[in-house]
Amino acid sequence: MDIQKYFRGNWRSPETFLILMAVAMPLSFSTWMALINNFALERAAFTGVEIGILQSLREIPGFLAFAVVFLLLLMREQTLGLVSLLLLGIGTAITGALPSVVGLYATTVLMSLGFHYYETIRQSLVLQWISKEEAPHFMGQLIAVGSFSGLVSFALIWFGIDRGGLDMVWVYAIGGGSTIGITLLCWAAFPRFPEKVEQHKKLFMRSRYWLYYLITFMAGARRQIFVVFAGFLMVEKFGFSVSAITLMFLVNGGLNMYVAPKIGKLIARWGERRALTFEYIGLIGVFVTYAFVDTAWIAVVLYIIDHMFFSMAIAIKTYFQKIADPADMAAQAGVAFSINHIAAVVIPAAFGFLWLLSPSYVFLAGAGMSVLSLVLVRLIPENPSHENVAVIGPYRLAVNAAE
Image 1 (cartoon, rainbow, N blue to C red):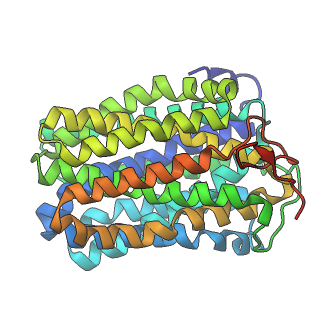
Image 2 (image 1 turned 135 degrees about the vertical axis):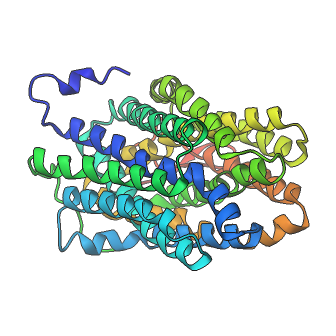
């Protein structure tokens, strides 16, 4: 990671601000993700149905991310990003103190509200503050920074629980408290950065972004298969402990620190169409194998490969950056997150019942989603721009950018 340059000289820059926020977020979210399956099973007696409902509730704030544009009438994007991080930290910190079905549902919604609104604002700020040429690599660097932060979190969880006998209640409190501390530091240490382009502060969709909307919708649908059920498979089918899950996350974080910046550079060199094609061909194979896996170490390898593919999602964002009006970034970030979470609100709960019939059906459905996504990303032009947003038909006819 070549991020040291942002901390030299005048380190109070937008880039450094984004990096520190990227450090703060995983300290809470990684803690929540690492513990939630075991905590829910051991302390609240969850089954696949309850975990599916919990994950659907977790996605409701993502579905409501379009409300960001209305909050921007009350506060600046930078301020809203910090407020969102505080909510994420608070929701995580109190999770362990409420080990019941209702308690976990409530803290999950609070944590998720902070997480999804932070992610919406972060995407908007990166696309506004970072140039089109630098955006793929910088986004890869942010993923690497977040992976390092998550790595630290997972290491502390593993040592605290496995070696130190620390109760999960305290692990949640420490993870959430760390996010709160870094957020307050960012609030006090950084100036309020001016907007390069004044953003639209109303809710709207543009017909010329139709392909971006569809790809975003399908990405949200298939992501839920991984986020909700891949980890649950490890606990329910293979009996993974908190320590085993945390070690798996440690490997993921270590690999992402190395791989994510390189994926960012690869996207800049390959282009969005080729990179996303590679991702979805790989995901079809991963999900089909998930459906029939009976060996724990193979499931772990699939989990790691699946997780690394998430870095390819940078290409969806840079595709939008190339075709969009600069004044649309904030509003469309909220719209995109809402579209991304339409399926996410439904799939975890609905597929929780499908899981009871057979986990294989869930992962085969994920393979089908990946096939449809592959068809859509092949419509992305080789060189997307404001005037060239998609290609259709056997002759790859360009679609004009006009409304």
